[in-house]
Image (cartoon, rainbow, N blue to C red; front, side, top):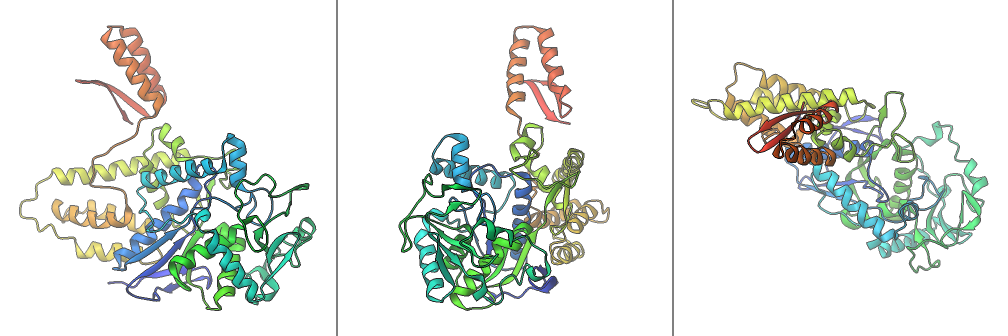
Length: 476
């Protein structure tokens, strides 16, 4: 069995993986802020984290996986600027922040299911753990790491010597100093809020933050709500203890959010390191090198892909074609190629099910298992792992039954449901046209039936044929 090596953001190198306790790996993944749908750039990070968990389990580890649900406190900037994202969502849709949280938490879990992501064992909501956050802030206060100004409780980063170590802030020319002018309450550029009460909106000094914030709780510092960063520290430590093995997120979390989490956790317990291995997924970008973001016009959610005739697993396959630490450029042509590749792969596996298994051992092939394991244990090298799967299926020396046994083993990591029948989800408009076409055919209105057939096929994604039960539509 090959050894598992993972890239550690803290050390900037691949490291042999050795957990705190061989009996259980403690894994924390930063979850969604549920004020809107996740876009496919967000979802790329969750696919990477799913692969990580599957690789850990491949290697025989029992994993305790915790992922938070942020439903309060995350401002429109990852620093302490703007308004609460939940409040922004509530204003946008004219419903309560509680309804926003429930709506988009469920939408995110549905996206996880569509992408065949393993569900975390524990999914704590921030609003269910306010007391836990208050207790941690009180401990930080007792440890001399906080100050109160303008109604807010701040973390004093000058009192934490290792602040910014992972982000290598001392090597970067950051503009954090500019934030002092916006928030005069801060003593140091990188100080951040642990608890908000009546802090002014940093984008609008004339308004009072908290006046229209629906989510508020009593605290020793006044009625208010927690800062975003304290949430992950408090909830992860509640369920995983003073130390954990792996903490994941997107690379955008490195300079602020994860840097602040380290300061909070280690400042609370003085146990170092809080996290043994930090792992971060890179961005999904568009062809013009533009990062996908909810605030931009390039927001693509999973439903859009489905409406255009793609199966969510087409997107999963698309993400596996690039290493998680590399930028991945999204294009419709690239997604088309991934869709074709996955269909061909599943057709090959389907043909194995239909082939003869006489005289076969149905044993996974050790040569290919070793090659596959070598790839996934080299910091989750999924492009190489996919190439191994193709090589296996094209090998004429391996029986169908042995290929099938081996590819099923591979798929415990790939998560592509390769041995299941090929299915797809029809967009609502296509479904409606099918109903209308069947009605036209029943009425022998052949002209209308042909017109609807042409509309379906003009999309370029679907083929139409007439079967015993009426109109049948399938992807090209």
